[in-house]
Image (tube, rainbow, N blue to C red; front, side, top):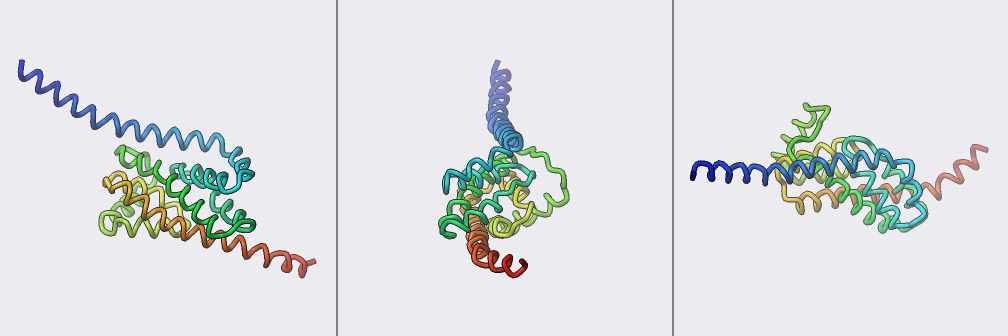
Length: 195
């Protein structure tokens, strides 16, 4: 009788470990599919100002591996709103959106097409941790999803992941917002010279 109870207890512990991971993976995949299916409707959010930008940034970065044009929105918003505000709002949305990759990695069985690239990122994560997340958040590249997955798989504290991601994304977004603001003053004279 005690053997059966011990076995039931071990099975219960195993399920308590599996269910949150499976839920995290299902959530990440569901968000990615929903965003992919609704991508043509994201442009409607621009009419809502900074709240719309936050949502565009969040949803654009919540996809796994599939690119979304959230930096284009940052550039466009920078042309009409204060670049620092645009960068902070967009960076916060992007950092929160990256949690889908983190959750997929935390779940333990994210689908990764380029396994070699993932293993390289995971090795950097093991060695440099937060610095890797910060750098990959700072520069526009498709590897941030892999860093998020690796962060979750390595059980990096979610607060640390979000902070490093937020810092990199905000700096990148401020730069793109300033580029958008500068484009407003540079492009009209450029086009008038061409005509």
